[in-house]
Image (tube, rainbow, N blue to C red):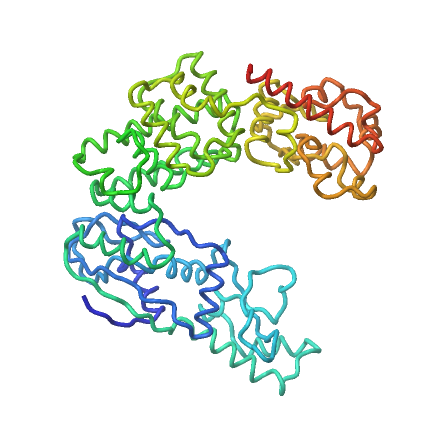
Length: 528
């Protein structure tokens, strides 16, 4: 093992030429937009960004690209090949995204210091209306030499705030520093040898000092070691198989596989998950996991009426269903019970807190009796009857909204004006569904109501955007009459039909009454 340095430009060139790739054990890009911005801030200031780790293997292993399509193929010659990036993926991927003008990272650089005492502060931001002017340059354009600094100065001369003798030299100096980011020298630890196990151990230890790897990341690394190509060619493919409606992360799919393979959710020792199992057994478990996932999505979209993963409050809540459906299909009664279980598990937040501990308890219980009834009995203690106060939340998402959506769709609720179904499948101009405040926000603010009073679930309804745009700051009694909205449509959304409650003076009574109606209908819907 030795150390060397390379410029960011050289490392990005290695990536572009397929000479630097990711081993299959690497996780996905997980940085936020702010992480990316902070990286460029550090590079501009000349701050250290840490070492990178490259495995200079002499034989090829299963791998994936960094952004672009890679050229290296397993079993082929690795002449001119630099290595596998074990640590540094987040930093180099961030650099690549910005340099290549990725739409998600439109980073810009401010040519003028906001604080003369701290001229390097807050130079980077993302393109927005407020910075759409000649004082802000696209970082991608500068890094790709698509900007002439003299032309920049000419454009700035048109700004009356620009003084060439006062600002010109500072602008050019800032521009030059930004352009020099690609020449930044990065320290690299180079690890030689062909022992994949040793490389995996090094990857795990090295990464534990940065943004700590999750247990699922570690399990993924161990899986890639045990069954080459399963992660890249199996799990990663399945993550987008049901796109755009249902997308799953690799860590989630790893957890599903671990559940099906071991009947446990014990990720404390990732190596033990795949230990003592040969490649065929693990692949067989993955086949069962894919079947279980497909059957679960059919249940979600067809029975629960959640047409996308947006309505799944806790993605962990479907792991027990994937486990059960990997073994066999549900009959009609089990499908109804599964729907009831999933909605209540999310409504009562069964999978908040120590998620892995709870999943492990459930899976161990299902090992001896993998039935829907057993799953219900393992969790029913937390399934209380739904009460009016359960609708005091102000959240527009989560278990309460997902229950409401399922209720609406089961009841074939329709938009108040267009009379189209609220099943989420209607597309077209302004057809997307929106949360509408039955008593409009502007009306309530005008009468002095607080934000908490305004944004409460009992004031939410679901209609399409077109209808929402037709409702101004009127009292409900006025806009309901103007739009000729039928009482049957209101009834399906648990709106009190007493017109006397549709006026601002009785807003509090309306909220109280609607909470009761929501609770009653929810209990009838779930047959509690």
